[in-house]
Amino acid sequence: MSGWLGPAEWEAVALSLRVALIATVLSLPFAIAVAYVLARTRFPGHGLLNSLVHLPLILPPVVTGYLLLVSFGPQAPIGALLEAIGLGVAFRWTGAALAAAIMAFPLMVRAIRLSLEAVDPKLEEAASTLGASRLRVFGTITLPLMAPGILAGTVLAFAKAMGEFGATITFVSNIPGETRTVPLAIYAFLQLPGGEGAAWRLVIVSVVVAMGALLASEVLARRMSARIGGRDD
Image (cartoon, rainbow, N blue to C red; front, side, top):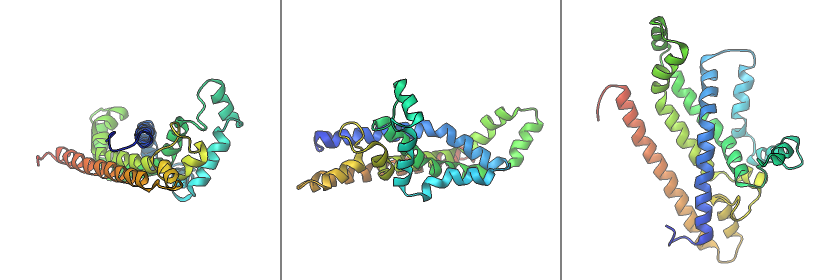
């Protein structure tokens, strides 16, 4: 692929993969926790939490990016603190990962929550009556049964993170080699005379990566379902 893509194109692909992978991996534990709380508990503010989790899906991505900028920018209190300890995210690739994680988080939570709600609570109750702790019940009963949903949510989040544009360009700009992911690179190439070829190559890469991730998740989900169902395909 490095021979087919130019240096700037390959740089954008590598950065996108890194940003999407880190955004997905770091979001996963929080998504599982939030999905569990939304699916298994009821408390004052449950609806508010659910709305906040899904807010990035309905807000314009530019609004999300602007909110990140005023919260984590160099002049903002949180951003200034992060800058002081060397963990600033504004106009850096880490900020691109943060923006991608926030935009992808609702998709991950929703897929995991739907999978968790399909788990029969009686199975968890039976394990509890046999003396298993809540943590052990979750680790040995709930988590394996919701694994297909976790996988689906992970793939959706990765694909969303790979394609994130609006929040990213607003929060971290379009800096070559630092924050220019594939969508931003496609946009930049389309602004240049003769840049359509590079843009098309990156579009093809995006489609291949997305299709590969979806096909891999389908195969793994079927294997997980077959293992959970106690049958072999």
